[in-house]
Image (cartoon, rainbow, N blue to C red; front, side):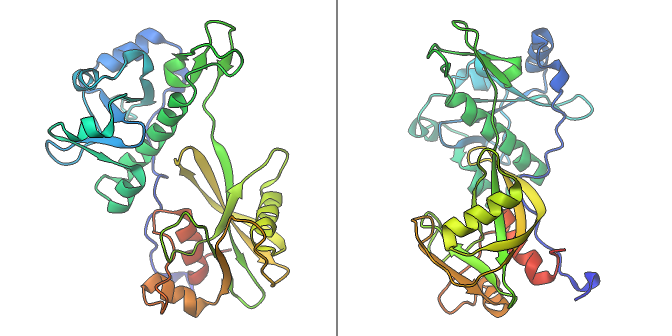
Length: 315
């Protein structure tokens, strides 16, 4: 297969964030307040679990400041996400304490989780990518309201990119958790696909796992593959990466060459795992598999790794 023969791949989600984060301005409280007060400022709102969209017209992730405060948003807990490169449309994000039921009872508002929103494609790729940033930041602030050193309530600082403790002076910063996600290929040109119990019925995907301290990406790929499937891996190479805001991961997409073939499932990470040849994987992609098996949706890096292998894009 030549490059000209390769079919276009659906775009991967969450990778098109072009917002200007203005990181050097985050300590300037007066400037941040001016951005919040700007007539074109928007606020991304979320409950503990879902995004809140304005549906008074076409679905819109932006709410004005007045509406956000009316719904219970706190100014002191608003995170500055950034603005357009020309300085327009400053965007903030925060979580409100109303329940999902309370929001659903209000007119012109709807709740949706980011994964569903990305699959449906109701917003642009850039907006969906900005929402990945918003969701990760909102989750971090919701789960880090207290100082991990002394337990005292902490305060938002640096426009949301730091929390500080007024009691002990502790400083806390948002985290991104690195994960390896890998398609392992054997000498017979088969792909190793597994089925974690958390996935919808029939979905088979690439293996994945969190990196551990003191590990290289390659070491993490080999360790996680061995732990989950009993397969040993030799050569490993990194193909691509993707922010995955569930809640705040960075997926490092890799390929690996298997040096063994016998699968052993020794823990509860996977409920099934098998080698799949190209014909079977094509059935999964086409929706014609006799058992109804499928690969993950196109928003994910797993889909990219699998379809790139099918199309000869893995070098």
